[in-house]
Length: 282
Image 1: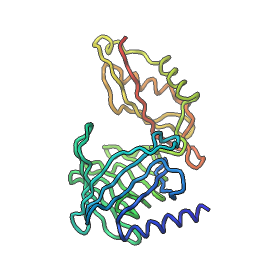
Image 2: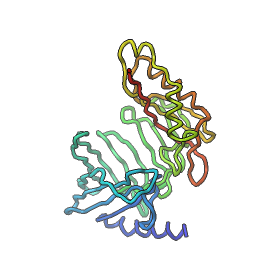
Image 3: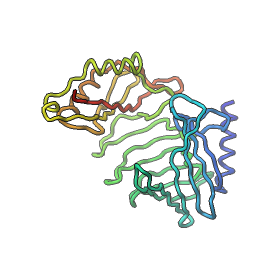
Image 4: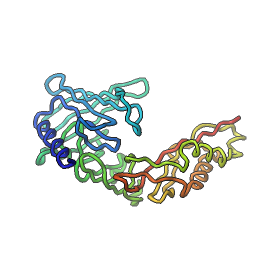
């Protein structure tokens, strides 16, 4: 049955590839391309407005971890073909963000395309996709740091789902491999969200310096939940200083071996987990 479904999807994609017109692609919570009859958490819809001008709409479920029945409209992208191998993608200005645009260069390759994406004239990513838009990635994709041009990540995809990856920091040093942002079953603190909240409340201490200087706010911290429930690769995404960043790292270290690992196809995998920690003066 699985083989039949994949064949149907590939046939659908093949028919779209040579006539990039109105298109709808459905995705699972791990970005795998789905048959329209399967449950999806997101889909992208392409509408050919006129000639080489398209609109790309994104729709998603209200909760990415639990499928509900309501679709919510997300971003809208304007796409214009500038020549035989280039499209420019523009996300209009909203109340929260300024206008953003990037360029996608494509070259025909077998039953798909070799894609190169440029942001501010810097190569951002490259790899194979069955479609120019929406992307349906397959095989190896390489991502780059915009400032240095060094490799940030290499991922291997099947039906747009990443199945393995390698990662490098800004210094060019290789870090933990096979770390995923989304998996079929996300990591969970032992006892659930309620116990996580209790654990943080019982263990976090307001730094003296932060209290003296009236520093408050939210520290955003990220770490990897490993296959055995341990935590690794702890780092601050956005800090507030006054010792709060260091305190956040200390508390996350106390969570070691207190997690249920994330899973894909029933197998424990490494998952990047982001956690906000609030420091409020009372």
